[in-house]
Length: 488
Image (cartoon, rainbow, N blue to C red):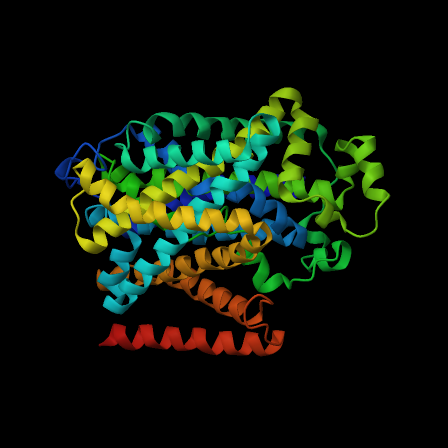
């Protein structure tokens, strides 16, 4: 538990110290924000700061800092270091600078910012890439919650239709009508779940692995995990450390802020809060898998069922959603079961809805469509919904195939993070500001995404050492290009 407490304190200090550093580097001022200058009653609406924070937190979190942290902790205590240092120096800086950059450019999206600072070809690539990512996320987060809800009441297809209708509403309606009212409540419930579990952790004080017990790949040694710690850990834990998905959500909130000085609390603060969520669930995962916690929270029937089979290992038998349900219900009782349901069902549904809305905004910027009229919004939303429905139908017919696609989505969000960090670095360099703030995490994430693409069995599956050499050389090449262009 000592590592947990040190990590928690480090995240809080990180917000207070490094968050202030990032704020001073960017330099927020009192200029008029897009929410006031371009107010349209649809996407550009001034909302209270606390409400924006809650929406931003839920948009960037979803189930990512829960499921990702559980699976990332399979690698062992090294997950703590990635959550803490990745969040403070990578993810929160990424979210703050990119969010503020959107705020400075009329609330424009990631693809448009990429075009401004990395060129037209990069912009076109990011438009296609982010659109694909948004629709994939939206489609994925329809069917999975529908399966869970159908186990409680109703038919699976009934829930698919209802969830998709909700997506249509959140995509089309003014942001203050549904998102602005419902999301803060769901965000509060997630925070309550994390605080409650954190309190139980403190009360129980279970014996847990500490970082000084070893930073090697514990999963390979004890759980049968086949993936190498680098780069797999840094892709598995995305939300809660560094995630490019956040840069697609921040522009929605940049269009609702009344002052640039709200940025540190909203962008940097929401990411640090997400890091706390990931920290709690990584600790619970360590307890569950490495400290025999599964024997303490599982029923005798579940324990007997696991021990009576030999086909699946511990991490194969207890997947992330199952761990969430078992721990919440075992430690928090009926209330915990309800909170687990909210975490596993409500969070992905809200994230999916925000993804479809983000897709509409990306298309609107790409083609210069005004979004004040319902007809214009519907015109852009229809192709998004059509592709989403097609992917959803394919997923229903090929449920196992979509899990393979989702691995590319996990890599894709980190690739977007690398691109966004380079965008922020170019901006800071052009403005004569301390570009090292984003350059160092940009370098690291570039190496991660290149190496993962080279070594992963689902992509090129190259030799591990060879992939490290190639990724290092390509990353060095990217650094050289940056400094050459900077001199020119």
